[in-house]
Structures are given as C-alpha cells and as structure tokens.
Image 1 (cartoon, rainbow, N blue to C red):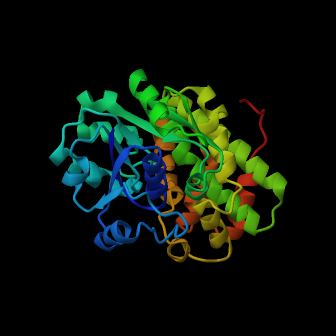
Image 2: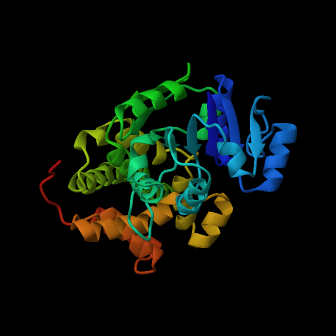
Length: 332
C-alpha cells in the first residue's frame, strides 16, 4: 500500500514515520527543498534528531511524484496553507482513494471547517473519500511510542474503518466516529480555550480558574457545534473533552504556550515568532467569532480573546472579564 503524505512539519513527519514503520510505502512531500534534501540524505528531522526516518521513506518537493500510485493521501499542513495545497493536488489527480486530514482549524475567510474546504475544492463527488483523525495527541509522544488514543472519522463508513485500520498500531489506538463536522470543530475550537488557560497559568490565577475556563469553554464549543448540526456526545469523547483537557494543561501545547507569552506582555507577533510554528488558535478565534454571529450562539470566551487580540481588552482585564459574567442557571 502506497501512502502519499503532504507536509513534513513536526506532525507530518511523526505520523509519516509511524506509517512507514508499520510497513507502508510512504512518500512525504514538502515545499521546502533544503528540508527534503536533508531528510532524504540523513533521515533526521531537525525537530526530532533522535528519531530517524525509516530507510524506506522517500522525500520529495514534487507533488506529482508524491501522488503517483497513491492508495491513500494524508495531509498535515497549516489551515491557511490547505487551500493552495489542495488546489495543487487537484492538478495531478482526481480523488479516488481515502484523503485523510490531520490539520485542526477553521478557514477564516469562509468560516468553513476543513472537511468542507476539501469538499469545496475537490468536488462533491470526492466527499465520500474525505476523512480525518483527531484527538489528544502530541507528535513527540507518538514518535516516541507513548500510548495514545484518538478518533478516525469521515463521510463514508468504509473510509472511516480504513483510516482506523491504517493508523492503529501497538501504541496508537484509533476509534471510529462518524461525526466528522463535530470532530473538525472540536479540534479547531479547543485551541482558543488553550490560549486562555495559558494566560491564566502565567497570571497565577490557580487551578480552579483553569478548570472553569475548560468547562465553560467546552460548553460554548458544544452549543455552537450542535447549532451547526453536530452531535453533542462527540464533545464528551476523545476529540472533545480529551483533546481540550490535554491542550489546555500541557506545556507541549503551542496554544497554551502562546497564551503564557501573551500574559508575559509579548505581542501576538513576538509570541508566534518565539514559538516558531503556526498557532492555530489565534486564527480559529477569528473564525469562531464569525460563526458565533452567523448562528447567534454566544461564545463569551472566544469573544473575549478576540477583543484582546484587537486591543479592545488589556491582558489584565481579559480573564476577569471572562470570569465575572452574569451568573445564570448552568444548562448543559
């Protein structure tokens, strides 16, 4: 079985390595020629020098070469980079095999989930091939073989089961869940709450405040998702509560670290530069506010963070603003 892997960042490299070690023929594509050359020659990724890629893996900057004969295509690119990557993919192939998305975000301009972006570009006839994996997982833990559980989803049940089978290993357990839109929203919107929890952590607001942010954050995410036709129970599972709790509490989380740096007084630009990779929660926050307006579902945490990003609230006022809202009956 040949797998074409689009993207060789930390997440893309680790998952591609996992698939290659399982015995699949993996070709990884990147736009970065020096990185492709280094990986092909040394097998070492600069972010993971202790975990060499298997000799069977190939690295290329030619998408046409990467896609040739693929039985499955997997993407790990940024949300903002997804549309141009898919437009290029469309030039070389008509989708007729599972296309697995691993990115987490919402397109800012359209407010579309990533599965909808893929359907928009690849066409409605391709939708049945589109799937996704998501859940509480860090690249460095997966490549180290630490036990991890996530979910596999899609529009077609056969594709879902195929994804779960391909990605499951002795240390990575993949559970099927057919609520692809709910899983896409959960993966994107939890990053907003993680930024707020990072801010609370840096400001020494205590564990109780972070627990409140996580609980109320999950509540507003679920309300929005249900209004958009998703299943409420999805948000009690791995892709919802599981991913949220991990991202909101671990120093390995880019979004958590981004929040801490903002609370240290750094600008958005300075914080992103120090982290060195894309912080999807910053962009998802803008999309969440748009979706909140479209659906008329209040999202006070997302709205408060959005105001902070646009200098309508100071860092000192932002979290108290979120924690001192009017008390109402807790409807779940």
